[in-house]
Structure formats: C-alpha cells, structure tokens
Length: 299
Image (tube, rainbow, N blue to C red; front, side):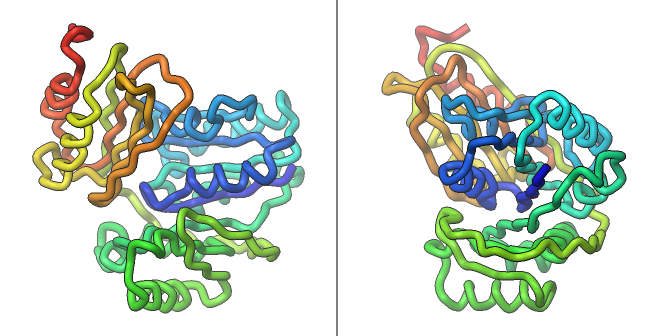
C-alpha cells in the first residue's frame, strides 16, 4: 500500500493540499485524518459530499496518545478497505517523525511503500514562530522529515519574506524540494522518500474546545466573534474552524493567525465549532457562540 503523509502546523493548508491532490486522483484512495479535539471537521470538508472514504481520528494527537490507535486504524484500513493509496493528515501539532516511527514499528511495515513526506508551511508567521522556543522543535521536526516543503500563502507576504523562509528551510533541510505556493496549488514533483527519521521532542500544552448545536446562526455575529479572537479575550487561540448554518445556506469558516475565510458547503445538519490554543476560556466562548444564534432557534 502506498502511504503519503501531509504535515504542517495548525492552519498551514494541509486540508487544502489534500483536496487539491484528490481532485486529480481519488480513485482507490483512503484518507486518514487526525484532528486535535473531540469534534471532527476536516472529514466533512475533504469528502465534500462525495463517496470518498475518509476515516477520522478525533480526540487527540497522533504523535502522542493516539500513536497506538494510528497503527490500529491503518491496520483496519488495510484489512477492510484494501486501498491502493492511503493519505495521512496528522493533527496540526503532530510531529511527522512520530507518525513515521509509529508506522515503522508496526508489524505490517513491510507491506507499506512510504511516499515522499509533504510539509506545508504558513509563511505569514513561520519566521516568527520558528524563533520561539515553544515551537522551534515542531518546525525542526517537520522540516527535517519532509521531502517536499510547500511555502504556502505566498500571496499574503512580500518577496523578502518568501526569500527568508526559503533560506530558513534550506538551512534546516538542504535536500528538501522547496516550492512557494498559493492555496497549495502545485504539481508535486517526482522524488524519492528520504527514509531517515530525525526526531525533535515537542510537547505543547494545547487544548481544544468544541461546540455543536442545531438551528441557524447569524453569519455577521460569527464573523465578529472570529475577528475578536486575536484579543486573547478567550485565551490564546491559534486556530478555529467549523461549519455554520445560515439563512443563506451552510458555510465553512476558518481562522488562523488573524486571517478569516468562509466557504460554501453543500449540506450541514448542525453547527460545529472547534477552537484550538492555550488557556481557552470555554465559558466565554460558549456565551459568544450562543449570542450568535438566531433567536427563533435559541434554547
């Protein structure tokens, strides 16, 4: 079975890249998505109403408590679905070395052909984050273990930032293929997987809060809430994502490092919100979300 790992920090663009890949080749492919938190969002966004097989592993991080579960999930996929290709999208705080080491330690490792690891980097805050002691090991691990590195969101940064990111990445991994991208749009080059694993310990004190409920919400109030996340009123939030039902139909939303995006969705049964960060204030978040509900659907 052909296995490809897509790695990157929260909100870097992993799911966008995955959707790009699947537009070109989804036949015979199963996607394994690991999300940090109790509520899965990415599976719905990836499948997009198609018959694509997406297996979700919420409630943790592959590189930590769920490493054993990863092995069992891959085993079940191999036995039950028998795909030609498996794409693994770990949590945005999962070290790729831990994912690879988990697979290498499995008794079915000799049945796997590991494809080049693709790392996605958000250039809007990469240089800032890689210099912070809290996060430097994450990026060292990601870059050292990626064969192809996409410097994403090139449309949002000036040329000198792109150059600085290229230099920083090349210094950490001179053999990696580095490609600046917008929305991760690129043809992934043909290359061999390195095979060597370099591990840097990364133990972030992150937590996630998830909310879901039926009915409709006021889109403008949701947008106002997302715009206020940078104030740290609700804690230090690195990522927020979800699905909302509005009078104009269901939409997706995405917040990362102050940037907000909405997208259209074909169908949604309920509203789903996930916030990831440190020292999150669940009570304040819940009150703000409830304030965005349409009155006729309030509890």
